[in-house]
Length: 425
Image (cartoon, rainbow, N blue to C red; front, top):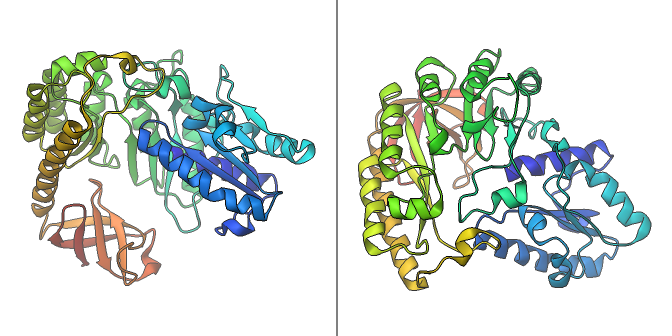
């Protein structure tokens, strides 16, 4: 989602006459787009701002700004830690970016806007990805109404707001007309799409509408909340040929005691029933998840239940983190905080188990022929190209960069924990 926000900001500045540069030393404006979901992401943002201080000394006219969730959360506090900062841009105010830059240049003063609006005007800003890309992000909604006890998203993104299905379909048709063949639908909780609209489509209905757009060969979406996952959505995986066989379904914990304290709105048993429902509709579906270890009050027995759930589901991949307090959330005030070394040990155990499951899943694909959408040059070897299967596996292949944007058939020859090796047929 932050990637798409960055694309929107770049598009707005381009429309205002600015030209993008990959060289920081040549820039007139540098914006750091931030995330505040985890403490580590916040630390990285402050470290990046610290490195920009030297550039500001060399070029006093350089405008340095911070945007995204951390900007929304901290507001003017950023000026205390980074007094050379010029701009703090909140999550509801991307549309004001050029106007705020002009104000800074004219007044030579700092500018901050972290106000919330009833409607987020930037949701419908259309962007095209870099030349040659055939995949694009489309925001269908923003905000969240769930207020999980550990999560800061409702406080920095605001309440749920869904775009009308007509606006979304028009944007995807625009993308298809410009060579995009794969779209990823974005939202903090796509499963509740449409709840703020009257008489419009729900999420399964929206997927069926998108699936009919000429030129769109692959549809993905993120992120889903388990409590809102419906049978109608599961049916889409069985019915829609261009809906990719992958879902990211964050479980967060396998213990009902912890899930209740997290205010997730489901039990481990209910989550497993949703997994069974998905697999019954789409046996080959790839399932990934998010897991937090060391949540306040998590006992060894609670952690073991998370391990047991992982062994039952056997996720294709998980994004796992140590719990960290987020300012203003309910869990910040919870008792029973877990010692750092305990959290670290639990995370290591969980990640080792996941690596064994990921490798097991990938090895089952050896000698299988897969459709791979080529995305560009491999990060590991300039002689290789890389792409993704429909079930979201990364495949590296010896091939020509000219195949970028094409779908090729490849036989999987070697499996690794986080990627696959293939050869074109």
